[in-house]
Length: 499
Ligand SMILES: Cc1ncc(COP(=O)(O)O)c(C=O)c1O
Image 1 (cartoon, protein in one colour):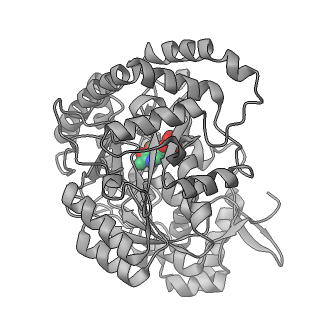
Image 2: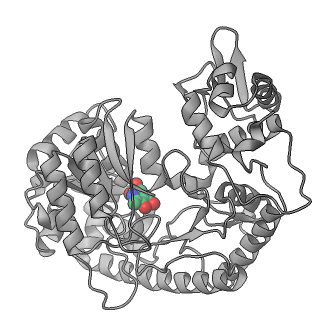
Image 3: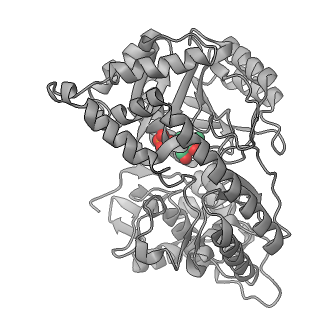
């Protein structure tokens, strides 16, 4: 690593470290020395991706002050991190985070496990299901048949293939929101859509209001874009948004953007009703805030006959204050990398113009495949498979966790792919770390929060069922016992750092 590429401030780092609290370790467990606890805390933050690799850490004196510990403690922690390969330093340039050679990178949780690891590790990291075959194969075959006329072009369609834009527009029109293809841009997944929107609307230091908790990768994307995140707590359980809090934040912070996952919120599974949707659109409009609504999970209601509330854009059909983002990733397959934006035509034009300097367009074959699915009825069949599979997985997981971990609490959502679990007072970060050792990969709560919130949570996805769901719960219970016994990085209470 040549040098640092971003920086983490002393107050921010101190907040992240002190938030890694857990129920105090059981009686008889020995606390590690303060410097060790601090070093382990930083290491966990790097390995979980909550402090980026190549981020400059604060000077020893500043961090010591922010944590209220002696400078010697910080110096010893930095030295330990250097020895272990998690920190690099150069005189005059400071110290920045690193991952030692041979260690998996923080983004490792995104990669599917290799076949040889499937027996030893149960992956609850990603809330995405395998392809709903035979529909993937059929869709690709259908795409290949439709490819020849496109093969004669250069193949870059920055707004998306006209046929797919029309198809997506028609689907909104069928849902009761008249939409023209000029209001649609096809993107590289919902991530590509939100990245483009953030770049168009927000400069560095600008505010974006986000649900708290919210989808981890979007929060990180916004942080990396230099946004200042303003967290707005969700209502209790699955009740949706706390409109009073939203009105206050929109009034007082006047953020440029607000980002919400209205349909089966990731991670909580909440589903705000029509009244909440109308009220949030009104509040955003009054504040001059553009509301970005992520509909990635919108087709994943699990109970047969379930009635969905109206799409949020139904309360702003012209798209002047609501931008909608959709995706094929959850309803169909994440490997397609197809997403889209629905907005006012002038917003789409600006997004398309900016794309010349980003990824130029979305792969043609995948767009044709999604278009084939949507125009043949294959989409509906594939989504129906998804729903059945996710429902079975959800019920198996819920039963297994209730049996193995009766102290863990959660609400069971009616759709989506995630269970947001309060881990009985244990640290989610420790569970994630120890889970890797006992064969279950699970993301910790703070990944879904701002500034270390939700330490006491983990997110469990509906991606495994049957015996595997039971085994996952058994392994989580084993991890919980180890954490209770003091295993993990050993950062328990802020005062651990008093040297
Ligand atoms: C709410 C939400 N938004 C966006 C994404 C990423 O979507 P895509 O794969 O289309 O980029 C996910 C995936 O987990 C998600 O849950």
